[in-house]
Length: 299
Ligand SMILES: Nc1nc2c(ncn2[C@@H]2O[C@H](COP(=O)(O)OP(=O)(O)OP(=O)(O)O)[C@@H](O)[C@H]2O)c(=O)[nH]1
Ligand SMILES: [Mg+2]
Ligand SMILES: [Zn+2]
Image (tube, rainbow, N blue to C red; front, side, top):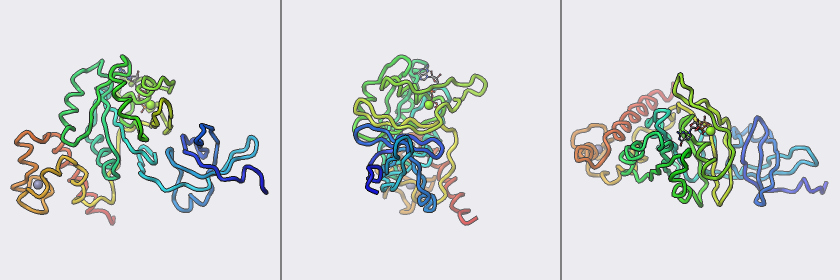
């Protein structure tokens, strides 16, 4: 057996449908693969963004994923690997859910991903972007105001996405696929917002990696709910808020979790207008939830 197909190839998984995955090699060739059972035994399933070693199929036959290389980062929702820059897409419709956004930002920062926000549909509401900027400036999260429909603000966003593996994420209907179509001149499927429930219709079903114009980006399925993390110690949550760092060690109590303890420097910073009250309020909401989940972690 010295046929070509036994040779090991290297590629990136660019999509997966059912139990079939597509790997793209460095020359841009795509290969349909299946996953060997050994991964399932290890509780590992391949994800879009994975770097893999694979053997090619003969003729029309599919090949096999032989190895999944170590992941730099992992998101479970959307399920993607090796993302370096998370691009949250927020729009006036559907109504922004910033608690959901904060959950995603918190998970991204825990893995040292970069995060930025694209406020889309600025043709419908030109003031949303500045409101979002107020919420996230102190955390150092850049906010780009764009309209995929009117094609405004696209160059700046595109420039900021260069050089890192990006992932567009956000509520269904926020306009992720439309935005990628406008940015990279693609024809990804897009959907309407339901009139009745004012939500997106989950048009994109799978994560898909696109490489074009020097940009590597994944379009992903929107969602409206994210389960709380089971293994997060409440004390660790504040470490995921870059804007708190300036105040660490300045509270009356050394163990302060910035949850309305007396003499809290974060509360003081909110009162002084240095930190955004809504973002801090949502932190406290997530802290409460994290405590609750932590208390019940053995149930
Ligand atoms: N007015 C306006 N509408 C937009 C803009 N961008 C997207 N839309 C509309 O928003 C709706 C949803 O767009 P999609 O691109 O399918 O949204 P998505 O985020 O990919 O949604 P899922 O794939 O379901 O997660 C479509 O009707 C788009 O035409 C924009 O800049 N302005
Ligand atoms: Mg989509
Ligand atoms: Zn404090």
